[in-house]
Picture 1 (cartoon, rainbow, N blue to C red):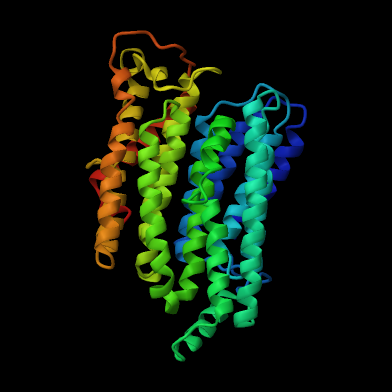
Picture 2: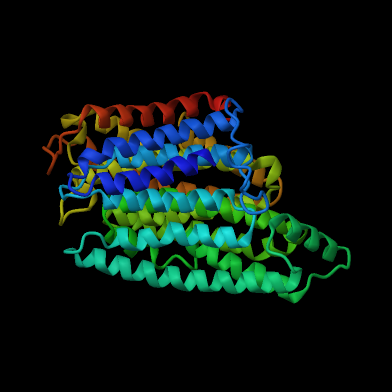
Length: 457
């Protein structure tokens, strides 16, 4: 709760104090606020500080941050600091974009801590509404306008479907509280058949959440929205929205554990199709941003494999995978933003990067290797712990995941075709010392957690 409070009040302060200032003057305060909030969330998790008295007025049946949830809150705050710190500031006056990003992050934190369907819905909306604005914040770019419209329409449809599912769940269980839903579903399991209202509710709520994480067949908005949105917004959507969306989805489905053998019958095919389509479509893309969009779709398929295994005993796998995916993807989007131009987003933007900027070249290599799941990186650790545990419950689903990982190497290694040629880069923006420090921190995390996985396991 302390992290949520810090981010909320920081968003208000940054909005009002940055009205007449260039955004870059508010950027450092934003990153500092995120890091402080992440640190306090970590302290709260480790019980170094106790905030129970301060937030005793919040019913635990609505919001409840246990140790795992606090760990995820600290993680998304840290990754948000990396994203905002690496990306350049706008030249325009006003810090409205930074404030909206922090408000969206508040929604993501509420999703992580929700213990009630109403709170989960509010978290989804608080996360989504600022992003509708941020996606179209580059008003002169027609692709950004298209991205905003598509994201808004798809978000509205998915929310409506999710709400309909909530109504069915309420009709079938008589409650919206997660713990009570679990008891009612467990009671129904004794009779050998679950009420049709509960089944319909689980399907519709799953459809709404699968839209948010861009899983097949609810992925079609993702490539266009990712490509059209400003790079910083795309990075935030690809990392923070996907992490918060899936963790909330996993927590929601854990309340229907007695129905596991039923809902996994249709989630496994969705996982396999998502993995294969995301990776195969990524092979034929020419735009780096569009390639990462399909990579994001494929990773949604990998994450769905987590639903095969018991949630409570294996929640740390979600933390490891989220950290891996978040670090690698944030570095990739930083490099895309640094070397791309308004009319060039293909892989040639990395031409000659090894000869021109050794730090960025190393960052590119580590990020690509981690996304591909190559050993000695955190990406390998994340896929190993996920696949090895899921293999105990469904071998064929993991085989599809391994095949998808092998296919992904084809497009993940495309930048290497251009990185080592002896040509000058098309563009090269100078990076500040602070940006380079954040980049090195992300790189070290990718390597250290890959070589010594016991630290995070």
